[in-house]
Length: 348
Ligand SMILES: NC(=O)c1ccc[n+]([C@@H]2O[C@H](COP(=O)([O-])OP(=O)(O)OC[C@H]3O[C@@H](n4cnc5c(N)ncnc54)[C@H](OP(=O)(O)O)[C@@H]3O)[C@@H](O)[C@H]2O)c1
Image (tube, rainbow, N blue to C red):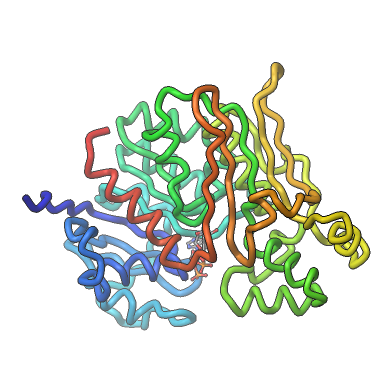
């Protein structure tokens, strides 16, 4: 029996790499993914920061969204659905069932303005799906409580490990288990750069290569100084360990201080340097850190190459469990968003 179609009205904030791929998978590429057949959203609005916005309460044509907002392109003047509305007004005033929030992480802004948009959407009874780490890293407890009060969901599967099932695994597959600690390699850029340094490459060239491949930030300091990893560690600490940890509270050492001699010494001792994220419950709360560590070659962490990642979950009843991901692409990130959207079709 074919499942019932699920057709939420979606307000999309952020139409960059991930936003475009989500729209594309659900339109031009929809026929390739039969598992997504029931997901038929109505796009009531699409917003960017600098390239314009479109609103049509009866639903925008996805092909038109992609035509108006290609990489680097903007909504043409005179387009019948062009709007000068702000995102804040749209979140407050438009009619929608789900806010899909795909704007950029703001470390300096403590997750804003996304945290306020999400709060406003939840307060109005809208579900929220985001791939942005900022909201759960800076305000998870507050946003989860707002979602509970409104009887809706706040979901963010793609915020850590690009759509690999981490949070849904904890919610469903590990129901009844208490996660006691996590560790992982969670930042693609630093893992890729460390591998290139081991191969004799230079930092600047490795970063340029990661940017060209599309997984490094335009400003790579957030990756190299460990901020992206710290934000992911904070999300995991807050969601899986009931912590109240923000990214600046994660003890953080990036990879900018690593020298060729450090890499060589690790190799001579039979290890590899990896940027490792850790968080665990203690008697006084949750501690979290990100730092380069020498990992023995036989350890699964040492086998994570390129832009791959790994997460180890320690629980009281099960495990330890390891989730690994090899060289994720934009499809993985978009899939996390789509999986979150599909899960909204089930009762809260
Ligand atoms: N790319 C990945 O593989 C990946 C993986 C996991 C998680 N994520 C997360 O997913 C989110 C989206 O990533 P992305 O690669 O699609 O980023 P992106 O290409 O930089 O796109 C971000 C989009 O958000 C819009 N935006 C940013 N600030 C805004 C604001 N204040 N108001 C309105 N719109 C705003 C941007 O507008 P403009 O177009 O005008 O700049 C752009 O359309 C990020 O939080 C990222 O960390 C990405």
